Length: 74
Image (tube, rainbow, N blue to C red):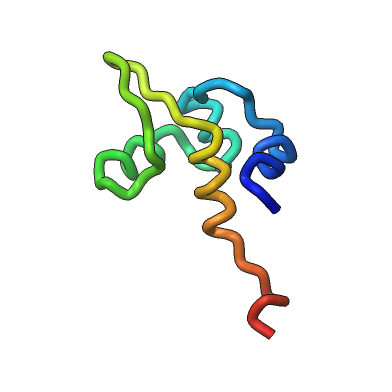
């Protein structure tokens, strides 16, 4: 599965995403995203003044990176 296909499957927008949107997709709190950014462990992000935005491709890549396929281990 390509990242572009996964972006479509997740229904991610074709624009930069807000913290609220990413938190909803990743099923975590906004504070978790903020904590991970502060610790340097979070997703790549874009900072424009006070606004933080995420590229849909980075969100999809992070989710795909965490994917575990038990069939691949066999």
